[in-house]
Amino acid sequence: MKNKILKNLFIVLVFIFLYLPILALIAFSFNDSKLNIVFEGFTLEWYKTLFTNTTLLESLGNTLIVAITSTVISTIVGTIAAIGLYKYDFKGKDFINSLLYIPVVIPEIVLGISLLSIYTLMKLNLGLGTLIISHIAFSIPYVIISIRTVISSMNWQIEEAAHDLGASDFLTFRKIILPEITPGIISGATLAFTLSLDDVIISYFTTGPGSNTLPLQIYSMIKTGITPDVNALTTLIILVVMIILFTSTIIQARKLKKGYQI
Image 1 (tube, helix red, strand yellow):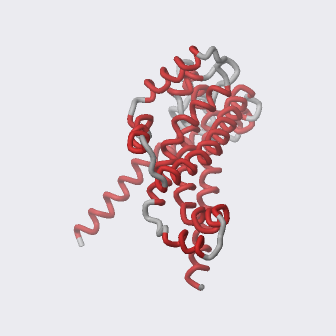
Image 2 (cartoon, helix red, strand yellow; image 1 turned 60 degrees about the vertical axis):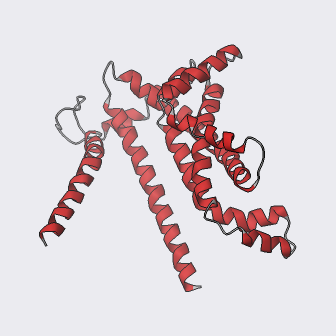
């Protein structure tokens, strides 16, 4: 009984440690004071101010453009690469598999400086284009690794059976392979989107004037002080993420329920 109480207490403390800062941020988004020190009263003023802060909204728009575009491209390329690297044997396959882990393990500042050097040699103007390319570059390995984990547990005899029954390569991919690796694709895409959304270091080296992202904008505001409308924006982002997660959980639960009924 005592061990059970200690275990539950430990779990509660872990959750408090993880979520208390988020709850504090949400609370201070309704704070009447401009200083995030003491809660002086309830107000919705900062949510109104948020929609008049064009600089903050523009940086949010840039962030979403970069995150969505890089996630879509890296997920498509990563899916094709993961299947190809698993199914086919060719010279240099082991070397390529080893290279996949380099962007994952090296410090981001090294990758950021390397990408900046390449853009400088190619005489590319820094902006949203170079920023998207950079995010694709460091997202693809995460997508491949996530999908390859799922692919390795697949029963590939199902694909052979589909070919024996006359299914084309495209039909086999759409009906057999794609549904099987969908969890890995979703995990890889989610990871790529999250990494792109909050990246600071690589974005700092590969962006240009007029293409500031939200993390870089907030980072630049630290010197003068974070305004409460930033808390309001992050609260809205948290709310949207919670709605997406809640909806996804309901859909997955319904799919499992239908599967059990069948």
